Amino acid sequence: FLYGATQIGWWLVLRPIRDRTKVTSLRSAAEIDSGERVYDPSAPIADAAPTARPVPMKSSFVEPLPPTPSTPPPPPVPAPVIQASTHPIQAPTPPLPRPTPRAPVREPETAETLVRKAAALVATGNYEAALVGFVEALRLDSEYVPALQGKARCQERLKQHVEALETYRRILAKDRRNVDSLRAVARLHMEERHWRECLESVEDLLRLRPNEAAALEMKGDALTNLGRRPEALAAYEAAATIDPSDANLRQKIEEVRVDVPSLLSRALIASANGNYTAALNLFDDILEVEPSNGNALIGKAVAYRRSGKPQEALNCLDLVLGVQPGNSSALLNRGNILLEQGDLEDALDSFDRLTQLYPNDEEAWAAQGEVLAKMGRNEDAQRAFTEALKLSPGDEGIQRRILELEAANAEGPDLLEELIHVKGIGRARAKALIDAGFHSPEDFAKATPKSLMAVKGVTRKVAEELLEHFRATMAQVR
Image 1 (spheres, rainbow, N blue to C red):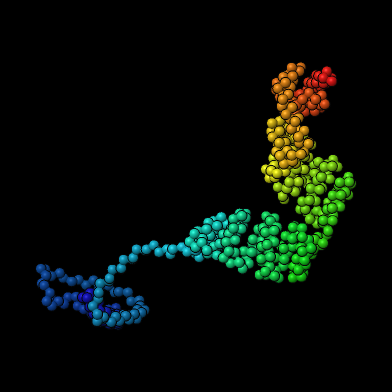
Image 2: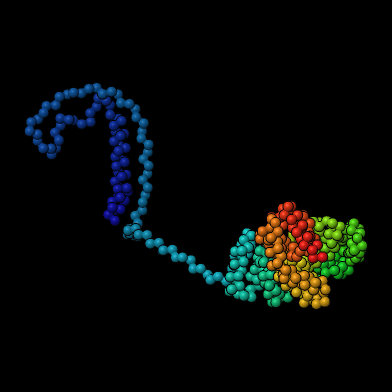
């Protein structure tokens, strides 16, 4: 307080007096001539202490140089007037301590917030992480429809079609009028080629949206694949009426108007009569309209096989199995062609699949028995023929094959010993010959050098020795 009062007195009283005195002194000094003196150095100073020995003053006056004119100083800057505060000066208060930041309180997750986060992951294409989010949302609320829809879409994107169908059915169980779910179910059935289920789903959709062109087109596709071509034509034409600019619909209408059953009948008759060129042309006409027509592809394969083109026949059958992996006719024909070509392993694979899928098909068991017999697996072959005989008890051909195998099994040890004693045949070659299908002396007598040389380790000389030995044996028997 004292310091502040002193400063105020200085600025308000003493400083203006000093400034005025200074200005007056400067003006007086300017008016004194160079030879004038304004004081007497020898005059005694009143009240001054006496000196011990007065020193005489000597004049040492030198004429000073004339004073240089000086510019007057700038006027003084007026001092700012500071008004004295009536309040006492307080010491500055120390700053308040900053509060320690507290962690934000997280709100508990809800099904809605989890669905929003999962939807953001779907937008980035991260379907696996999004699926986890939707599942977590359903854990909190198992009936939350947006979570079910998101889960189904993610499963569909991840090719989990069975799981996606189940999720869409859960949605439809809650809301039968959910159009998006009906569309998705129909689409998934169509991708899996489940045409009856696809047709049912599309009809449910059309009850809600009878003028939806895409649904009508899907109905036409299902009816076409079910062989109901007149109904498919009506569905396509209804869709074209709603969307006349769709060129794909016009193409389907032209294709469904072709009388495929009539063409297929004519092609099968031509193939049975040996007119394979005409049959193949008719099958091509059908496949131009319906590229995945299984009956046309199988008929074409049979025509190729009969005309001596087994590889082309196999190509047609592979196309059928690519669309219908369990097609019995395709598997049976493929196995028979491979058996004729000597590819026993692949032929057996086809027949094994056939007997697993259709255990009541006696042709499949009989074909499997033939392959096993040619591979030298007589016991397995006999079991396969026995299964075929159970399904067709009166089949004389199967009965004859079982008797032949029983006889071969009875002669097996004697034949093995006889082979071992033939010149150039050891135990390993003898076993290989029996495994190759030579089970009796009659088989060796009917063989050719080429067929014997097909067995590993049998040279031309050894084959000739075998033929000579067994033909001589058969001649003695006769």
